[in-house]
Length: 504
Ligand SMILES: *[C@@H]1O[C@H](CO)[C@@H](O)[C@H](O)[C@H]1NC(C)=O
Ligand SMILES: *[C@@H]1O[C@H](CO)[C@@H](O)[C@H](O)[C@H]1NC(C)=O
Ligand SMILES: *[C@@H]1O[C@H](CO)[C@@H](O)[C@H](O)[C@H]1NC(C)=O
Ligand SMILES: *[C@@H]1O[C@H](CO)[C@@H](O)[C@H](O)[C@H]1NC(C)=O
Image 1 (cartoon, rainbow, N blue to C red):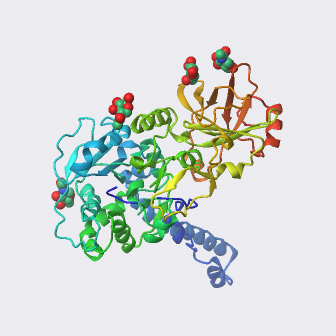
Image 2: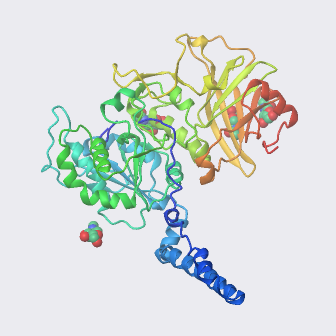
Image 3: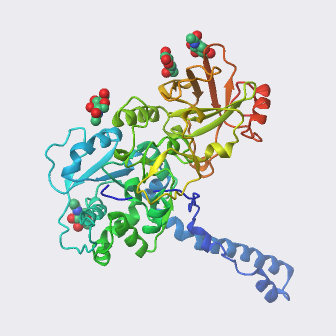
């Protein structure tokens, strides 16, 4: 955790900032002015003047708008209009030769030389760097900067300067600089999609604070916690790189690199744009609760995974993450997205966290109770027990918990995506609900939200299909216009339209 400590707040999308607006009151010459002077003249002259005033109006209109068209050189038009893709995003990983040895395996999960632009910034040349790793850059000397916090790590300065060092390389065509630790696992496709909502030619600092309330009070609610990863638009990054060193000298007393970057971005007058898909994960142990109730924003990163148990049973950490990423590769936007449906006939509630797990509850559980995060995890520090999340206690008695089905496999073809989930049997609670089979198959279409839809996302709906054999099948679809996600609405939607895509 070179970069340091993440969270969640309502998504504010400061996007629609069109430069033209301030100039629109291009009030044309008041035509009454002409009429006053011409009142004594002949009717034909009056109409001549009226025509003239019309032409003048038109002339002023053109003059007033012209600066915008000259402003938009052809390349600027292209850069604004062409979609942001993977090649426009440069990832910088902060590491050290000591931690690089074992943390490279996390980077390999999301990085490939073919499709991702990334650099790893180390303090000294590493003993061995895998050919599967991003190119290694040795950071510049930062010993001249003050670091006065007792018990802190002065490597924080070197890591903060990664922002400058990444920018100063003048890599071509970078719209966004993304920064993370060597134990940050990025979901690259979703990072790119998320950033493409924003105009890279404007100044943006995008990320998330910690899910720990206490960490945020210690640092700032408006700081992008570095381990969750954060993004800086190229226009802001250029300026930040120029002023960073002079700014860093004022902040020797701070702990981490992210607090330094936050302070210098704040000095430039810029605040954090919160994107809740970046996860600092200041928590330990069993992450099930957090992963099963992800916000509607796409999953962008996970961090602190060394402190977490493997996220799937019977796998080691990297294997388990690889399993999640394999599902992500089939339908990136849908990974962890939570969809809820009900089977009223047998009174069951199904909460599908796509690509990860399905929870099946006996009876009718209302949606808000399912959207809350189950407290399956422990706080990062024992004293930090307040979270920036709606939490619900997770029953200690495994027999009181919902039945859980974990992702087994995912396959897709032209018709759609099938994901298989198999039942997880808690050793301490071998009694199984006889109503439930061992397997659930979920059918969905690739989730492809446009930028406009991402700005106003709506949760999808699902149906539990009548089961023909030992398997339960669930179909995820768009919700109907007036459709409510509740057990009562379920029966109605099924009877009206058992297999439709919700386009009623
Ligand atoms: C990047 O560009 C700046 C300004 O053009 C130049 O001073 C600097 O040397 C360049 N850096 C590299 C690594 O080429
Ligand atoms: C995890 O499992 C994989 C596949 O079985 C194996 O290659 C890897 O070495 C294991 N990692 C650790 C840390 O045990
Ligand atoms: C689901 O799992 C079964 C075996 O458990 C397998 O035969 C089937 O191909 C899987 N389907 C998908 C879509 O992965
Ligand atoms: C059960 O039904 C599903 C679809 O209804 C089918 O894909 C699956 O192969 C069937 N399984 C068995 C064991 O017959």
